Amino acid sequence: MPELPEVETTRAGIEPHLLDCTIAGVTIRENRLRWPISPELTQMATGQTIVSVERRAKYLLIGLSRGFVMIHLGMSGSLRILPAQTAPQKHDHVDIILNSGITLRYRDPRRFGSIFWLDQLKHRLLDQLGPEPLSADFDGETLFEAARGKLRNVKTLIMDAEVVVGVGNIYANEALYLAGIRPTRPAGKISRKRYARLAAAIKSVLEKAIDAGGTSLRDFLKEDGKPGYFRHELKVYDRAGEPCYGCNKPLSAVRITGRATVFCMRCQR
DNA sequence: ATCGGGACCTGCTTGC
DNA sequence: TGCAAGCAGGTCCCGA
Image (cartoon, rainbow, N blue to C red; front, side, top):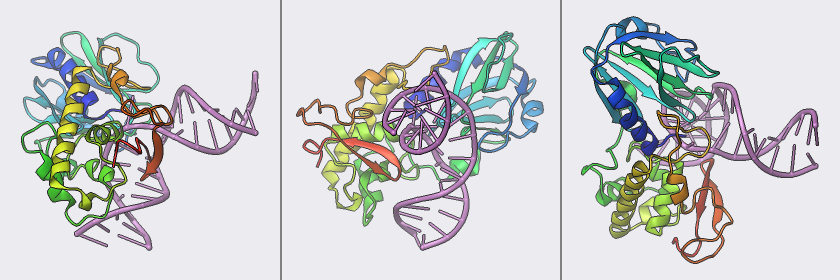
């Protein structure tokens, strides 16, 4: 489900509802997420004021007067802003209830997501993360350097969070199409110049997806319950066998490390 | 050190 | 129509 644009869309959507609010309580109905939710989350967060709502990679970081709540949406997670008395539905695992009369509700049918209480902004899952793709710390040189001597294919490289964060399966496919690079190409055999193009394509597709409110295929909904509209802008993802918008040739499909991969045999080399 | 594959879950779509 | 298989936006961890 959520890649960087969907997480960023969620962050921007919930931020104005959360800032300066006090947490009146945290209800955990189901703590069996990817990692069990620590029971101390409730007592540590209750009574505190929310001072920031930020994102690092695909993690949401809710800053409190003391400490942080760190949330990952996994494959099927979403956050909604709702009136506090709204009855929970199936898979609504956690509520963060605010003194303003609203609740931030976490839903995650597959339970691949996670919620952590952090005393400080430090966690092993944040330690090894690469640069943010939309920052100046990321460019073609980042990719070229990471790819030196590597035999692995370029799609796996750009989906590796130690190389660059936030690029999941949809946007990896899209960026490689925009850059005209075949996903199966060995990463170490691609020129500086083509990596500059790929880095620019990653930035461009992520920015445009954020502007559109993300991509909604199945589960993903924004904090207000509405879908994002980038689905209509997808050039290759979910279009296997359909004509390439560039040359009309049917798009090819392969699996790369278990993930659906779509590309144009003619436009991507 | 690097890499691929399995594992974790539920729900929806597809094909027999 | 019913059922089982296959597939889905992530990513950690293990064994080769």
